[in-house]
Image (tube, rainbow, N blue to C red; front, side):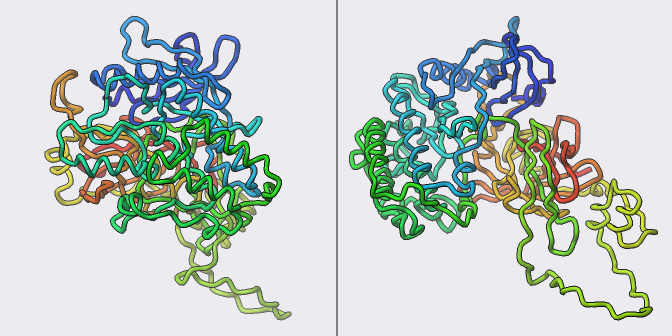
Length: 566
């Protein structure tokens, strides 16, 4: 899509009788808005382009039609659909139930989650899959990010059938595998890929067993905090392990996992669909029967230490996984320079969810240890030399006045400087030529990106002027400069490509310069790209709620191709 099409619609835009209030999320193929109806009801409205070629238009219509087939409490309800603008339609809009809650992963790692609660959530997803499969619909991207837990009743809801498939529909995907997330791909899919490698037109057709295997991966992660198989040493999937090795039994990873629950999980991860449950209905019945047993400690917490789950280096799939309330990234800068993090109190207003920075970590080797305060002898003492303050310390004092400023700086005569945008800089050698000539990208084009999971939810604090990474949720296509309808579009960079760069914190904006791209298959390219929140701006504006100890920016950002950092 061209840059003007990807620019967020301004609040107040009317679509299908609803009024746009805010952006909830954006990905490679759609933008989701929070909208308010004539009666004041809030919904999520997904806007999908129709002018990006017949394949993508067909996928947009398919997503709409799949939603109309499905009605169940554990499936996100589709409330309506249409084309926009009415006179010359360029988008298909799909109006969805606005689910207030968290992803299954966020929910599962909240303090005190019990064995019974985890089994209940998986049981509810199995019920949703049973309804979908009965209607002939395969989800094809079951994972924690596509499962929301309602805040009101803690029921699991399976969302985002954007890459789903209905029996009898024509194949839209070019390539061996349908869209999805590689760590959740079933062994039979990998086996098909090996058997038909290089065969023209070969395409794997996912079935109900693929959804059940993916749900087994979800359950394994909820029980253990890790994937069933470690990634290959090159960062991709260890296909040999998926095809031939048995996952480490969950109770060996987490002794709190009951053997009866482990048996269900390992059966879902069987190497062939026939060895799994006959279908989602059979899985649901098995979980209900299991839940009725009295010899399982259902109220026992699975993860008392509440550590975060292990992340994979290679993350596939699409960004628009969940339709919930507003998204934000809290970049927890280490403002104070003493190895301590500031955990701010309070909450930022919606649609931004402010996430406090985590507690201070143990001092590292390069951090000066904090010595206990020694008692001061009585009587006058010689004045100690003033300690040198780092720019990070001075930045933390911005906005303070009077005694607060003096206390922050430690020297009342010190004036906090203004941090400015980074100076101009040339692109890495060969980056511009590679991007334009080899990859087919245009200088000035913008692509929506998501932060690497290490930077989300402040699981890892981001230092001032720090190295970070982004990933592209879907394929980055070349040929944006071609006229609509012309043949010649190709994938410049595949989905899940990581972009590595550096952040610079200014007075009101955070700037990012990215100089390396790494694909899921291991290729590395020099690039020259910068953060942006529009087609013209450089950097991202701090969101409301930013302050010492945290910086809030959008979870979905733009990455612009440039020929020089200005």
